[in-house]
Length: 112
Length: 113
Image (cartoon, rainbow over all chains, first blue to last red):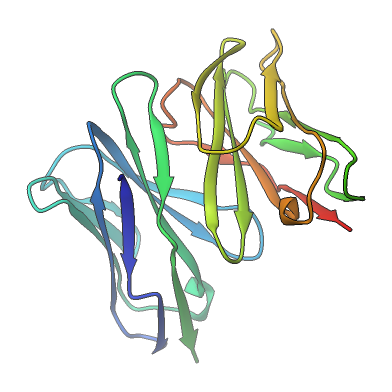
């Protein structure tokens, strides 16, 4: 059965800390892995990863994919209270147009 | 460029009724995917439409259906509503099929009483 597992489920840190969020997957015919940030509204796109070992970076956020070990990490450095959100990982797979499965998300709380 | 829009934003229905939700993708995007989000199940894929054709379908009963029009706007229909259908229904658009780099709308909050 195709599945995407995120860990930890929740995390509480203080401003300035660095966090690492994990996403592991087991799917058939992997195509890409996507990270989203969801606050009180709909998810917003962060990164799309298709190749192993190539880091994607946007400001204090970065992500990398390991297709051999079937996981991805999302790093956030120098966290701010505005980083508090649910971070979702989704995997696109299958041979045709692609199906997608989301993980349950990691709820990050950044305290001042 | 305007984002993904969904209407209505909130809806209250009773069991047994049917409902139609609408989604207008970002201009130029031809793929629209629908998701159901609930606290217990998280975000679950319903189906994807591209060029007026359903390309993929998740594991939902036949009561959930959709369609896409020539202007890429999409509608989702749920018939014979059940209490468990109460959820946030999100649509996401992307330029091409396969849910690459998709952008979500604000969602429609459906409450079934």
